[in-house]
Image 1 (cartoon, one colour):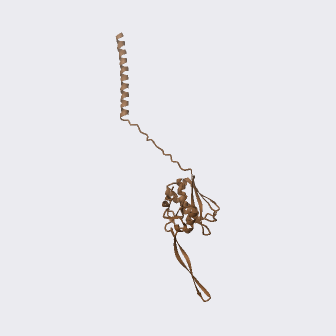
Image 2 (cartoon, rainbow, N blue to C red):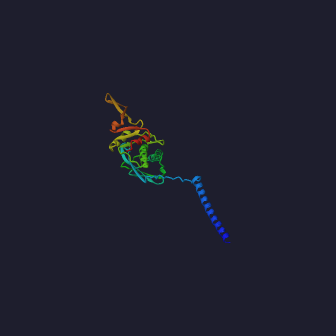
Image 3 (cartoon, rainbow, N blue to C red):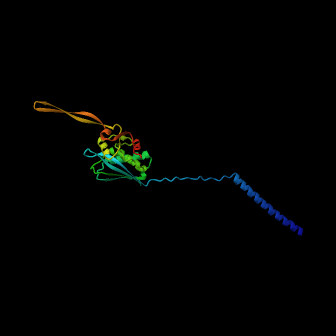
Length: 256
């Protein structure tokens, strides 16, 4: 009886030992499988670059024009850019702001947006002009408006000794204007060293009246003829003048 009891006890221990060995073998097999065949999915690490948009920028440029009396005048043009929802605002004091100047602002904004690849609808743009002149207007402010708008969107400062005059077209080209000599003199008066003008307007042709008279008895007969006289704008006004074709070329001269 005692012999059978010991044999039974030995069988139980053998079962336990074999069970433990099986568990160990199974664990080792599982570990081998996962380390050899199973490749965990690697989640790519995403890197985010923080983009800091300028909350506010302020740009000032000298705007030259011809007043209602035909005199060249200069006034500061200020463009402010603020994070917003794409509003275009004007702040005018002592000035009748012509409709065509407002249209130039819209074109200037469109050209500046295309040139800078900046979404202008994310910003409110405020245009301010202060002047003692009763009226300063016309599309000839377009190029200056565009330069200032580009600088405001980029949050860049520009040179204060460079002045530009010319219209602005939707493709960024600069169009012809009048009163170049008067504007050159106005630019000189505010300390500018360089005036940018549209192509072909570095010189200006005037019709100079010439009067010749003859006497016949007691009567004097006079006749007025006109002679074309071409003057160099820069030499006449005492300022460097450079012709530019488009706003991209013009902006290079304003960069600090």
